[in-house]
Image 1 (cartoon, helix red, strand yellow):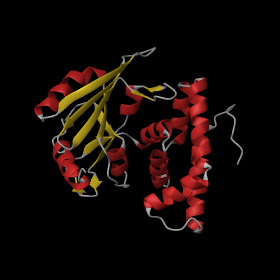
Image 2 (cartoon, rainbow, N blue to C red; image 1 turned 90 degrees about the vertical axis):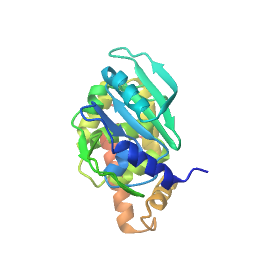
Image 3 (cartoon, rainbow, N blue to C red; image 1 turned 120 degrees about the horizontal axis):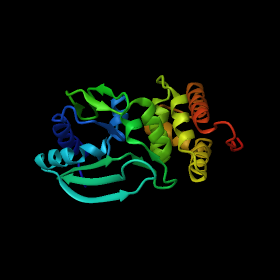
Length: 242
């Protein structure tokens, strides 16, 4: 079994040498850690401009990573979306260029939107701090990507960050611009999940926040649900019954 501390040590060494001026941001679990909710992540997720794919390929090879496979998806506008899976010893890394595509709805968040106004953060991991100030997807981008993924861990991550100020209108505007029947179904299903008691109790357990009966936890979950509502239920979108 992989030792998560040993993996994080290798990730820290890799990210300390992040190439400057690379037109890329961290997304996924390490982006969550950048906003103060450190947790072990299975791999490193990087979103980059399609035009920098060659430079990133050279950098990854220079640092000893090997390419496992690449998945390519055509888009209506803009470059194709590519997901390249790399690895070295304990480190797995996904390099996403051209945007980020949701498998279920096939919605594509454009690369320019993801890379807009990145935060610069020295990330505190469970095994130590990354000294370099890394470019991380802005909080609005993290909300969009986590809602689009919609897994229990993604929603728990957002709940853990839901007290932080964020422009949810920007996230809603993005989803409005990407709207298709399949995306509307996905977002409605995600909101329905937030209504489930099991996700509430599991999220509290994962985040070590105490009892589900605690008033502060109930209030925080209601606030989180209202925040999801403000993104998901634009005018005309049906609401699931409570």
